Length: 238
Image 1 (tube, rainbow, N blue to C red):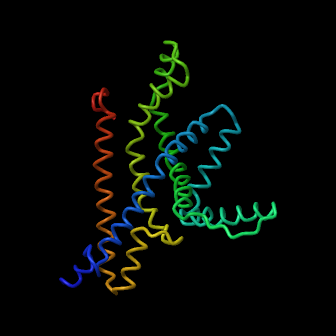
Image 2 (tube, rainbow, N blue to C red):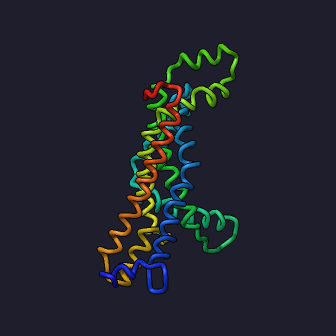
Image 3 (cartoon, rainbow, N blue to C red):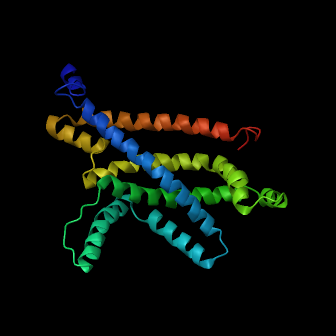
């Protein structure tokens, strides 16, 4: 038993540091997707409510494609498709060279689009809860559409959408395990390497489970705090 636990040590001969490095890649990737995925999802939701038929068609297509495709397939298409696309463009201009797209960047783009597609549905549901009367009142006070959206509508949308967005975040966190397929060294990639080297699958897969559960627990606390903060001034009602 002690020999097995020694395999998780941070010192020489242990896999502790490697697993922590993989955990940093996992959480960094998930966090990097949020500033792109959530605003893009909000944009898709706004486009879905637009009077412009072209905007609605774009939003419907985007949502359908990235919610319908398996996340792994989206990741592989972005990773390999971008490389092939760039090479073809360069070849068109007479440059022949091998292009390798950064795996972290490719994963961030792929998962941001998936997050945007799923979060757009959450934003859309939140729009239905926020009454139009408040927007009309803000406009009657002389506020511009932009000011009304960011100062009146968006805070209320965020309050209503937070529970759904927390589920999107947890799904994103789990989806990051797919990046091992493009050789990005995350938790699962390091775990598989450790299992191959030590022949201790139960120990290391259990360790990976605990890491993901830890991230989920911390995320739950953060979202609970955010929901409570946004609920201030609404009588605690949701």
